[in-house]
Length: 370
Ligand code: BGC
Ligand code: ZN
Image 1 (cartoon, rainbow, N blue to C red):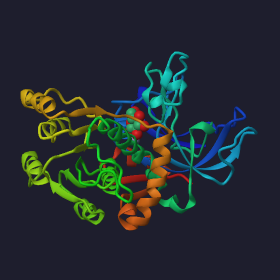
Image 2 (cartoon, rainbow, N blue to C red):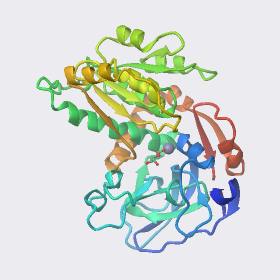
Image 3 (cartoon, protein in one colour):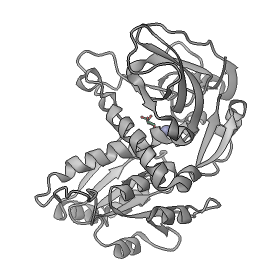
Image 4 (cartoon, rainbow, N blue to C red):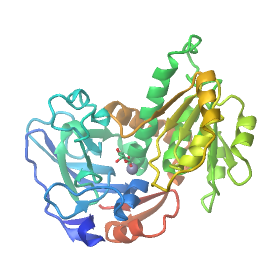
């Protein structure tokens, strides 16, 4: 079968023949891949800055944001059956008995670092015709959201983040008691850094959670991200017209920053204007561009004197996938057109190498396999 792969030793990104997988255990599920999203991580992999082929393989089949359809199930499979739509998880647990998170099914918190990630690190990905994996890594998606379900994986990043934010904020005495009918973020202000797919999906989740949400990003570009954010009920502020000081003065107390730009300098400058009792969540993985100068006294004073919490988050567990699937259905009902507008191109598998190595364009580019 055909697959899009990187061959690091030859510095190549190409379509190749890859053996079609077969069920190997009674709990295995075989999927026909339908769609695969492309993200910044893939672009790092195709420029050989990140990612590793599986042990013993010269190449890595790329692709981790996927949607498939079940074509065959092992005898012991109970979660799914042929015809179901599935979004598989990305990370696979490490083999160490002493790794509590992996043994508990929370490999997103793996402590040994020996996990693999399909399409990224040590395991083939989904930009190919068929894949097989254990049913415990599969999430069933309702047919009603088929056209946007490939956005599930990037939304899991925000789902994991917001679940952690609620836990962190339980530290606050007046931690707004959940009033019936009122979303938990009501009365709070969130800033999203970056208007790529992770930022825009994060903004949707924050608006849905009741936050007054402001997206701060560079040039809106041909896809009118500013207009899109306004359609969601958020505010868009361009980096070209507002400094971070002006942004903060405009927003008021910044209760939450959801960083989704991967731009470290802006992020740390934003940390300097995070509000009282605020939480700052990092999700971007910046390239190594060298040191920058920062006012660390200001940042540290702000952290201490304002009771702030800063955390990073990577990957996601099953609960985040389930939440993302539920919330995509909610978004599709609330913002049918803006949600679909996040997917700005669909390219057949044969065009994947070119798409991956070409100039990034649009918001979310998707490769259609079947
Ligand atoms: C993926 C995550 C993965 C991370 C680091 C991201 O693009 O969405 O699943 O854990 O890259 O490899
Ligand atoms: Zn990704």
